[in-house]
Amino acid sequence: MSDKKTNLEVATPKRDYVDPTASTRGGVSGVLETTLRRFKNLMHLILITPLYLLSCAMIGLAAIPGVALFEYLQVASQAQTPVLRYFILGFGLAAGFYAYGFSMVFIVPLVNFCARANLKPWRGPYYSLEAIRWYIHNAALYLIRYTFLEFITPSPFNILFYKMMGMKIGAGTAINTTNISDPSMIEMGEKVTIGGSVTIVAHYGQGGYLVLAPVKIGDKATIGLKATIMGGVTIGAGAKVMPNSVVMPKTEIPPGETWGGVPAKPILS
Image (tube, rainbow, N blue to C red; front, side, top):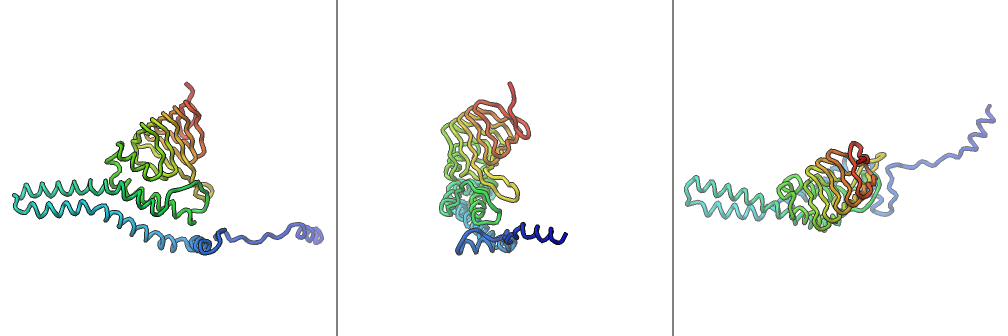
C-alpha cells in the first residue's frame, strides 16, 4: 500500500500556488491592480472619493448659470411687492434648474471624453483597472440620469446626449427611457423604437467576473414597455421584443422575429 501511495505521489506533480489577487499586468499598473484586489474596501474608498469630488465639481460647474440668474433676479426684484418678488425668485429657481440640466447635457460627455472613459468589450474581476473606467463612465451618466434626464426624454436632446456619450444611433430612432447603462457599448440602427422604462445594459456578472459586451439593435426594431436588454445581445432589423420581457446575455434575435417572456423566447405567429 505504501508503494502505491508513493507511485501516485510521483505521478501527480505538485502545482505551484497562484495568488488569485495578483495582477497579470507588469510594472506600476500591475502593482496598483494587485493592491486594489488585496485591499478592496480601503482601495474602493480611496478611489471613490475623487469620483465624488469630481461629481461635485460637475454639479457646481453646471449650476453656475442658474446661480448667476437667481442672484441677478434677487437684486432686480428688491423694489417689487412681496408677492411679485417671490414669483420672480421662484421663476429664477426653476429656470436655474433647467439651466443646470442643459449644462449637464454637455458637461457630462466632456468629462467622459477627457477621462477617456468610453468602454470596450472586456471580461475580468470587478476590482481591476478596466473596471475603474466602467465606474467613471456610468457614474457620470447616472449623475444626469437621476437629476435631469427624465425631463428631456424622449426628445432630440436625449439623443444628442447619448451620441456624445459614445452611443451609435441611427436617424429616426426614439429612446423613451433613461434606464440605460454603458452607452458607449450600445448601437442602434435607424428608426428604432425604445419603449418607456426599457432597461438596456451592456454588462452583466458571471462567475464572479464583470463582463462588458456590446448591445446591437437593428433598423426598425421595437423594444416594448419595461423590457430588459442585457449585455452581448443582438437584435435583428424589424424584430420586436414584447413588453416586460427579459432578453438574456448573448442572445441573438433574428431579423423580423417577435420575442417575449422571461427569459425571452420566440413567439410563433
